[in-house]
Image 1 (cartoon, helix red, strand yellow):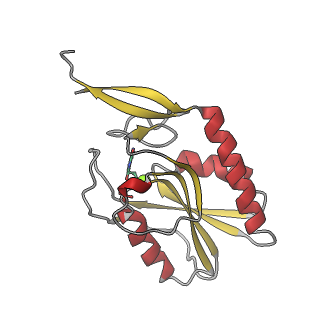
Image 2 (cartoon, rainbow, N blue to C red):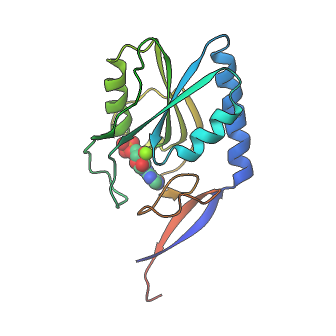
Length: 178
Ligand code: IMP
Ligand code: MG
């Protein structure tokens, strides 16, 4: 199978929406500090662009959990590959995710983080595919709701490729013979 990537959300549109969400976060956390938790690797680009635009004091940490492997289907298996470096006790934690699909990864993660006594725990995602939800997750900030298509770019991958695309694209699969 060969694949093609079609532009779905151009860079300018993504950045403009990130700016809006950053302003909303800055006003919601006014007078407080926000601790961003970037979920590796997909959320790296989004976390950086968002963090640069937040005007309240920001601290950051990184976590890695297993999700799909090199396929486009969920395995349903969620495992911590890299835990946080610092304690989140008493902090205003904002988890930054690239995309919420079935919701399995995030519902598991929020459960674990909630038990570590943060002062508050919220979730911000670049993309959401609400149609695909299997596990309920409360999303506080969503940049874009998208249809049930496999997307790449802006940190998102297909078999570890395309993360560096500056836009969000839809992957179109085609037969090599065609
Ligand atoms: P969930 O547990 O099904 O919500 O899966 C979330 C994770 O699946 C994301 O953090 C991504 O790593 C991956 N994922 C889901 N949909 C896509 C997609 O369209 N493109 C790339 N990765 C995806
Ligand atoms: Mg991810």
